[in-house]
Each structure stands twice: as structure tokens, then as C-alpha cells.
Image (cartoon, rainbow, N blue to C red; front, side, top):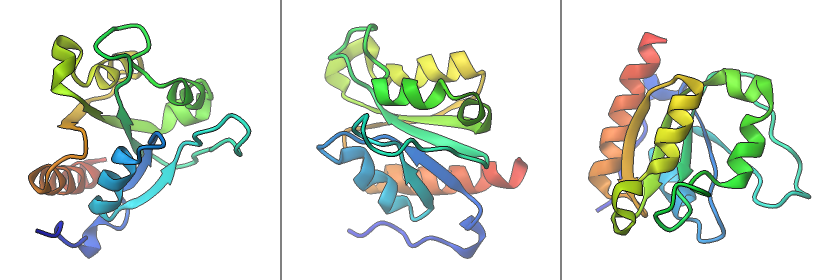
Length: 144
């Protein structure tokens, strides 16, 4: 079943995401159909600077441990004050095998930046996850 098509009223939604080499988060973000930019995977890649409000989509690392839950690349990206100040919400991916640490990266980032942890999805996400995020972000964006 294909993911729903992007609607014209979603054109202002902006997503910034990090995805590892597995590409799980990247595939999910592309299904959303919103404008998106990827946080570089490797330190030698050009640093991403964001000058407009965005929602951050990030996987959770650490295998169920609190330490290491937020990918280092995401930490580096958010250590830039301008990037940090433009973030208006977080969506996180995780693995339910992590137990209480499921999608913990989103909880950590949302608390630190004082933004909502808007949605959690497992691994690649389902078509239902895609639809819920599309609808939720479209509604949210109309309010900001």
C-alpha cells in the first residue's frame, strides 16, 4: 500500500532528519512528502545550517541505554544555537525491544529544547504512522 500523497497545504512544513546508513529514518521522511534536509552522516560532510522553523526526526541509538540514545550527529547539529532555536518539535524512531528507552532520543531532545515530542514510530514506520504524521504536522504548521 502506497503512502498518501502530499497535499498542497503542506508546502510550508519543513523537516530536518538524521538517518544512519541503514536509511530507515530517511525512507520514513521521504514517504511524508514534506520539504526535508538530512543532517550529515559523516563529520567531513558539509555542516547543515537551518534558517527556518522545522520539526526534527531522529532515530534512537544506544540499544536501550540512556547514554548514547541521541545520535552524535544530532547533538552536533543542535549544538549550533541557530539550528537549536529553529526546532519546533521532535519525532523519534525507535525499537520496542529497547523497552523503556523506546524513542528515548525524542524525549531527551524535547525536554532539552522545550518543544513537543510529537510522535513515535518503530523502525521504518507503517503507512498508518505516515498518515498520522502528515496530518499532525499539517495541523501543527497551521498553528505556528
